[in-house]
Amino acid sequence: MKLKLYAKSSFLFFFLLLVHCHPAFLQQSGSAASKEIKILPQIEGAPEKRERYEIKGNEFVIATDHPLASDAGMFAWKEGGNVVDSFVAASFAVSVLRPQSTGLLGGGFAVINLNKGKLRKAFDFRERSPEKGIAELYLDENGKPIPGKTLNGPYSAGVPGNIQGLVFIQKKYGKLPLAKVLEPSIHIASKGFSVYGDLARAIQSQWSLMNPEMQSVFGREGRPLREGEMIYQKDLALVLEQIQTNGDAEIREGETAKKIVSYYLSHGEFITASDLKNYQVLETEPIFGTAFGKQIMTMPPPSSGVHLITIFHVWNELNQKKTLPGGEIRPILDLTEAMRVGYRDRANLGGDPKFTAIDVNRLTSLNYAKSEAAEIEKKIVSGAWPQNSSSSLKPESYNTTHISVLDKEGNAVSSTQSVNGSFGAKVLVPGTGLILNNTMDDFSVAPGVPNLYGLVGAASNAIGKGKTPLSSMSPSIVLDEKGNSLIVIGAPGGSQIPTTILNTLYRYQVEGNGLYESASYPRLHHQFQPDILFVEPEAKSNFPEVDLPFYQVQYTRHRAKVFAVAKEGDKLIGVSDPRGDGIPLGF
Image 1: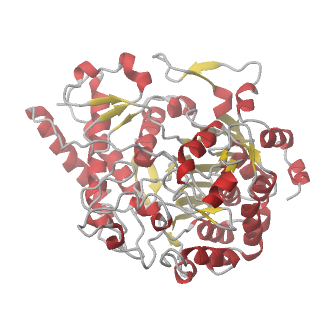
Image 2: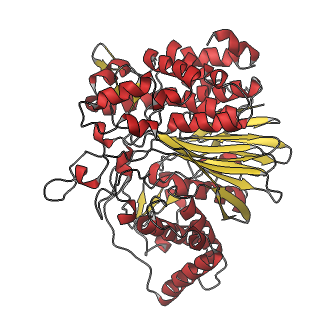
Image 3: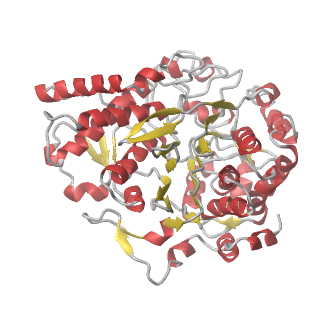
């Protein structure tokens, strides 16, 4: 890609500065009228510059987790593409820019709403367990999990689906040639970009686990790259150029596929040529529910979208109960108990629907929500507060990324993508610049054993060849009464993804806060196990903990990041979470 391509965009100067300058530039670049607001208006919190995280437009908006990823999406739109082209351009770019969060050897989900609601589709391009991916591989002779085997190294990776998924969706529903869509990501990979704080911290923390090939890309003179230094990914740029020419055949049977297979020859041939060649992107129908009075469409299993809908429905039923405690405790009670139901179901029922029966119709039905709310009401009124056995929360990784895109016609894409933990398997496949995922940890390696995110799964999510693991990722689109896209939303953040969407939509749709305020508002999170209500520290000064003797409250940073775009009248609003480094763009 030649730099002059960006001359067609009004963002040329913006792009040039960002490629060669530290992203902190953006925090200084607001208008003179820039107004500081607190993260939560009625309690003390860190001030943020609103203009850095919010954009208003008339034609198009995109929200991502890196400025250059948003710019890549804008580039595709300015070149005559549609929301699908913009989403795919941003996806390839963010895979270059945030390798600690996502990557081309990762996977993801996407939902699209096109042509005034006449075309609604859900796409599963998540990683799958290879043919040799069986539970016994991760257990010792006593049947106990081998520490770290699902987390680091070659056996922690599932068969990747990101390239296949993005190419499939763009070819079928985009307008531009794939080669044009890939130009921004190739430019970023080859010309380099400045290491920002979050990336520098991730490199430092994972350095000792990286294989030598990976250290050569993310290090200099035998030590980790530092904030402000440039990072160049020449091999990755070459792979992207090969995808320009070959499409997804490059990862199925091209030179890149051969290099992956060659790497695994010395690792038990865990991922084979057959695994790569036979990978299938799944195009299905989305599932629907009601979110605070509006219809919402989201991903079916093995996404957690079904459990997100359950949470919304149970909240609605609890909110109508007259016998439950009132005052400041009430909204906390309704949200928390709804979360507990959704995450209980996730732990007990979640998995790949091709291998285990998941009654989506029941879980998303209003009768189910009424029944669950009635049980909660009985226990609270009788004084037998609902509890479950608690367990410790394992250290979390909040890596993953999300992209939300919306145009004035209501065409929209919501997509969440990941390599699972920070830098996935910490293995770079020699000669490719591509980093393996560690998605095998998203399976239940053994009954009752929590994964990286502290989530406990059942036999329905056990490791098995060809299976797709259960995921917290829940890309969603809220619809207006005509079926057009009203809000496009999603988040990275492991187990906190569904509750981040819940918190944001609650503040926006129920409390009437602006989209920026709703995204930045301190959050609540309960995931059934452990039996703890996690609350962001900014809320501590006025959180009614004295009225919550039945909850064990822990104040901790909610590091999931929401990326949302919405239509308000004839205006489009885009917000990238101020907890992160991304910015939205639009015009």
